Image (cartoon, rainbow, N blue to C red; front, top):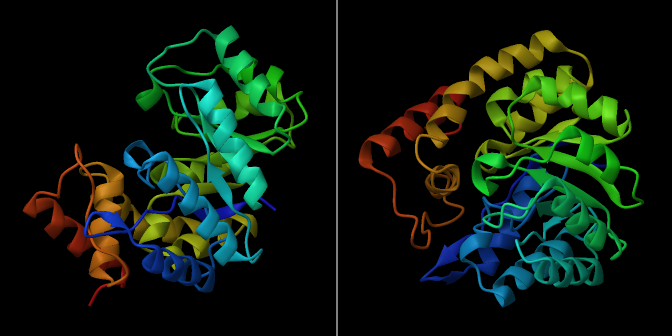
Amino acid sequence: MFKGSMPALITPFKNGKVDFDALKHLVDWQITEGSHGLVPVGTTGESATLSHSEHEEVIRVVVDHTAGRVPVIAGAGSNNTAEALRLMQFAKDVGADAALVVTPYYNKPTQRGLYAHFEALNAIGLPIFIYNIPGRSVVDMTAETMGLLAKLDFIIGVKDATASMDRVTQQRRECGKDFIQMSAEDASALGFFVHGGVGAISVTANVAPALCAKFQNALANNDFKAALELQDLLMPLHEAIFTEPGLVGAKYAVSLLGKSTEDVRLPLTDLLEETKQKIQTAMRHVGILS
């Protein structure tokens, strides 16, 4: 159920507000282009600058409009366990298939604290993907801690942003082969799959969903020659999008396709002109911009 190419959906804005019409069009486009699932209000969905009511409404709209066509993993993380519990309960109530829960940022909990946080969330009864992104949360969940959490009923997988291939194997050893490992790094998704991953929660898939889905399908079919060719094709786009913060690059690229504005909220800002040119060149390289 949870595998393949799953875009970490952008949240489109218009005149400073969430553009729910554009969001619905993005959902339809992603599914038509072959994406295997949708992940709203993660980091790329600007969860950090959405109000609580906006956050919840984005989840509700994506779940309702998807209408079971593909799985929806709702962003429900916080560095406040009580708030994460509330977001998870909301996601469960509106019918999300799972929740994506980031390791608590800024607080810098111990491994014992990380376990206690996710143990509390497990009680909601909604499948949980741990989002381990030490570069942003400044705390790294060890494979051993993840292995303990994997014994709980609703801790089913990880979105791994460590870019470490060793970590995938370590997590297979500690969590078991059925634990669902999704790459959070577009550029290293090929190696991640070979080490035991089953897909990617992707930023680039916002921009090139058909190619990202084709790439993941090739991996699933063990067609590594085709996958490597697609990896080479997509790499300049991965690099261009992440020249500045990836969600800003993705939003700009999507705006060039006429599907959203490039608007972001402070403290994020518009891209530098040279970054815009780099993204345009990369989009032409992969054939999605004339």
